[in-house]
Amino acid sequence: MSLLSGNKAFMIIMVVGVMAVVMLVSWAVIDIGCGEAIQTRVRNDYVAANYLALAATERMYARLSSQELTVGQLTWPVTISSTNVQMDGTTVGSYSVNAYLTGEAGVFMISSTGTVNGRTSRVTVKYGYSSNYTNGYPVGSAGPMDMDGQRVRILFWWVTSWVYADGPIESASGITPSGMPNSDYVQYFGTVTQNSAGIVPISYWLGQTFDTNNDTNLLIDSDSSGDISLAEAQAQQAGGDPNALVTFAADDVNADNTINDADAFDYYYTDYYNQAANNPTGADLGISGPGDTAYYSGNQTFGPGGIFFDTVPAGTDIIYVDGDVNIVLNAQSYWGSESDLTIVSTGDITIVQPVNGSDDRLNLIAQGDIYTGGINLGDLADIDGNLNMVTMDDFVAVLGGSTNGSIFANGNVDVHTGLPSFLFNRDLNKGTDNWGIEGVPLGMPPLYRILTQLDTFVIKAENLGTDPATSYKPRWQTH
Image (cartoon, rainbow, N blue to C red; front, top):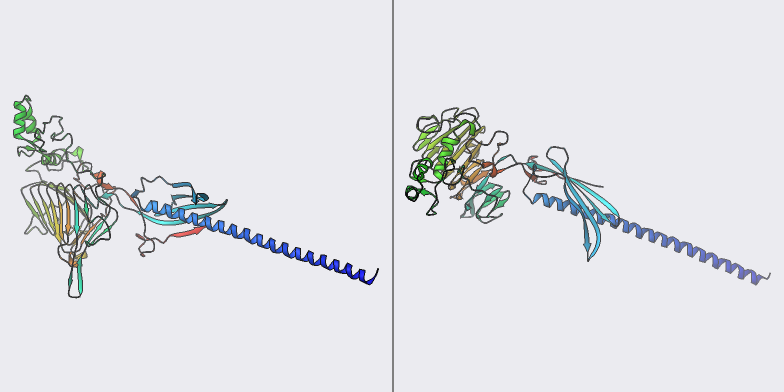
């Protein structure tokens, strides 16, 4: 073989070798590139799946936090079943999410799963929650509700008096202002619902209207005036009802020659509720009429000390005043022991600068209006215990002061600070007692439980404070 032939062979071998190396390198590069592309796609799928899981968690959180829910009404777990996510008409993935109690007191968990191209990511987060006590509406009304603070400028400073009101605030009519924040110097803490179908006006009628004593005998409101007059009863007797006047006399409980809501109010307390079988005490309440220990005739003024004002006898659970009630500073003596007192008035109740012990519960029920007002002096001169007020007419609060409890009016609710100063801030706080444990306050209207809030489910604020009763730092975990 010649030298030339040997060089050609060598060259062929070199070319083949180089081609082999190039092919190996190319294959390696392609393999690495494909592997990285696949890994990138897998990684992107997992990232997308994680975003879907996070979105599902946020959707459940929004669902739970935007609704008025109660722990008792919730059926755990709360579920959003598998839901497809589309982009430009193409399904790109899906998610599902559950919320459930963990067994840890005051803690619930949201667990969600996101799936993209068969690849799954799961996210869990624990939130704190609280449940409000069984208690009456912090502020409720059948008629319109108006709250109004004040603000003026004095030289270089703005001076403001605020209305602060706990929710749920609810009215069967309009609420002014109805939102937050607002320009009327009113701040709500909780839901505000106006024109609510859930508010049912209070009624003391046990049977049909104009059948005060529930004996099934009733007259007809022939002139559609909303009550029955003696003249109407006489006309119905003359028209052929021989028992019309007897029926009228039986239902005209307060003997004012008219059958109306006032008669139903009187009958409820002085007859029906006064019977041991119809009240929680299981005893005669002593309010059937003049001469009874808990029945007061005429207007009454109550205050501390018993020197200038009457005091309610220690140990009294309920009193009935056939007239107006004026409460100066306190309706009770300054007892050191826990007290639960109900005052029922056929007229108006006025309570000036209410002061109540932290272990006391004062309940005011009026056939007429309830008026209150004072100065916001914090622990010095405000309600420390619970003050529950129910009026068949209007509730009016002027100037300042702070109360805990339930306020409900069949008429209007008007809250006006009047003067621009922090001393005239008005705080309307929800009750701190539990009617499920302590019991519904004695003397509350029939069916008042329909106006109570039962264990409202509230998600605690995120990182807004250090108080564990109101704030909770969510605990996230990704799988």
